[in-house]
Length: 171
Image (cartoon, rainbow, N blue to C red; front, side):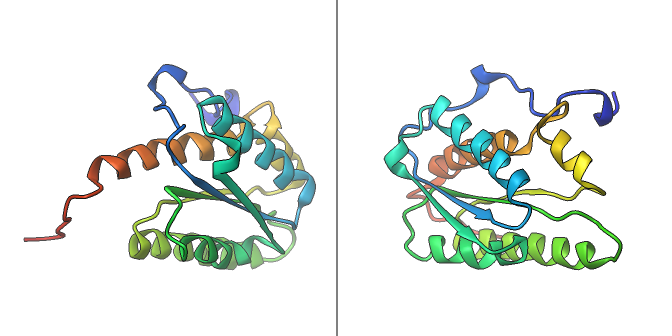
């Protein structure tokens, strides 16, 4: 089924681990505030719904999506978060600036995740226009903030399964 025809935020709640033992960081871009705050609300509510304790969720804001990796790095530096969720929205517009920003943010978060061993979840919308963004920020196609929270819970749980064990890459 094409993604345009369904709510992309539907998931089986029974498969989500209990989040009560985890600490989460959330970094929210202020640019496209109407969209990013709707994504944030979906994210935060989903974390709490699955047991995350409100005093174990730290939220910071950065000016725009380009700054999400540095915001995530600032949170990751103290080492207490099991996952960091980065929320933003880069609308295509009339130039190709979105391609550069989206690539930089995705690369930055991937690199930070790998180097810090803290999952940094890409909760960034990359729509062609504001209407598409609204449809993915609580509209007919769900809320990407919900999806980012579910991903963070799953990755925090997976990370917990390997904590205390020495990890090797390669042979």
